[in-house]
Structure formats: structure tokens, C-alpha cells
Length: 325
Image (cartoon, rainbow, N blue to C red; front, side, top):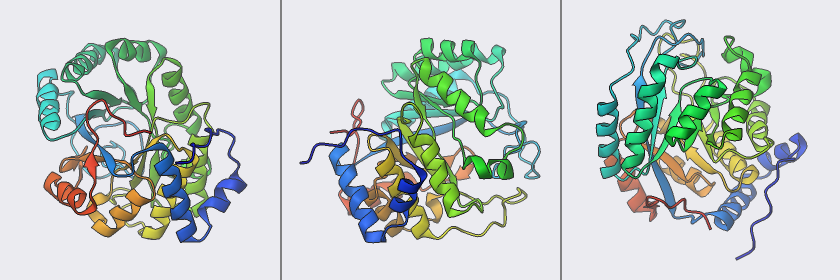
């Protein structure tokens, strides 16, 4: 096997655009080659996502049913009990998940909630699972408290390109997102950061979103790529669906630009055929969320995912294994 090429953080837009727009078969071949140099191509990581606080978010993200500014009428809930989080994590582990992600619909957590968040991290870690949280923007002290509690990953998606960002969100800036990522990384927590495609953006926005991540000082450890799930009464409810081939190109570019990152095939899988998902795995996706719900959106049933894995000869990554070579 050829040695994997050294990681680059100096990709140019011209290089990324040339990769994305090369003939589709050439792009897939290159992405699969890079994938095989860095990962077992027949292993996919299973993660589970739980909403620990739903609705009432002060942000105005145009895609989100949890925004208090959108018209989806999703009621706000309080932070759920620590014991329930641990119980749900235990079920997720029994179902084969090795990473447990906890998400709260906040602009940022309040100090009064930090003790409960720390207890959630402790409890899930004691089960032998990797921990991940997505809580919005963080202050330095909050980052340190989560790190000291043992948090493995922090998810904070940049959502789209810097150019298109203000079309989707106005309550915080693209720079705010990058600042949070840098703060988390500098504290020693692994970064999980990706975005959403199919929000009416241009092809160059998808390229620039990935380029922004691939030119950070360090690549994110996980890169979730979400297909928009249009939700009634949100500003993007009637957006035109993205061409599936464009979605696969996005996955492939993420794999080439960030060879050692886990590329997660995230939201939107309920609307993807098995064949499209298989093509995404070939293009370098090697992580999925399991369970029938992603925060407030639908997700394929776990037995369907297992049936697809069986058809493709894919195995779930074992706990403590990242599938890397």
C-alpha cells in the first residue's frame, strides 16, 4: 500500500475547485484511494445523537425548527435529567454505537447548567463511550470545565461558506463559529465541524465550506456533512433539492482535503436511497448517526442501517477503534 500523503492545511480554492469538478469517476477513484490509505474502507463508525434540550433557541438559523424566531411552533424544553441521558447512552452502546453526542438548542450554555453537563460527560465516559457535545458558543471557562470533565469531542458546525453565511444566519457571524472551533481545539478537545448542503447555496459555497475547514490550523477530527431536511414553516421549507451527484462530490472532496478526518454522513439519510448512501461510503464517508431521530428530525431505523451494512459487507467500528491505518 502506498504511504499516505502528508496532511495539508494550505489548499487553495483553485485546487479544491479542480478536484470537485473533475470527471465523476476520477473524483470517486481519487477519494477512494485516499480513503484506503488512511482508513479501513469496510468499517463505518456508529454514533448516537440525543437532544438534551430542545426548542426555544435564540438563533435564527433558517434551516432549524428549534429556532424561536422561526414559525415551526416547536415548544421549548428544559435540560433533561442526567440519569435519563446515561440511560439512553447505555441503550445506544448496546445497539453498537461507540460515540454518544449530546446536543442542546442554545446560543450558548448558562453557567447554571454546567454542573449537569459535566455529570453527563462523566456518566457516558464511565460506560466506555466517546463523548461529544454541541452547545453553541462557549466561553473559555466553559471549555475548560468540559475538557476537565473528560469531553472528547465538541461539535460546532460552520454550516456553509462565509459568503453565503449571512443568508442562513444573522444572529452570529461566521467568524464567531471559527473562534469557537479554535478555542475548543486549543483547550485540547477534539473538534467536530462540518456543514449543511442543499440550502440554496452555489457549488462554490460547498467547496468554500470544506476549504474553510481544511485550512484550519488542524483539520477537524470529524466532519459531518448534512443534507438539508426541509422543515415546514422554516425559511428553507421550500428550497429546491440538491442533485445527489453534487452531494457525493461534496463527500469526496471532504475526504480528499481532510484525509484522516472521519467524514460523517449525517442528516438527510431518510431521503437517500441505499445506492446513494453506498456511493457516499465509496467516496469516503465512514461515520453515521444511528437511531430513528436526529435531534428533532427523522433518521433511518437501526435495522435498516444494519441491513445495508450487511449488503455492503461493512462492519461497525469497535469501541476504542477509529478505523485508521
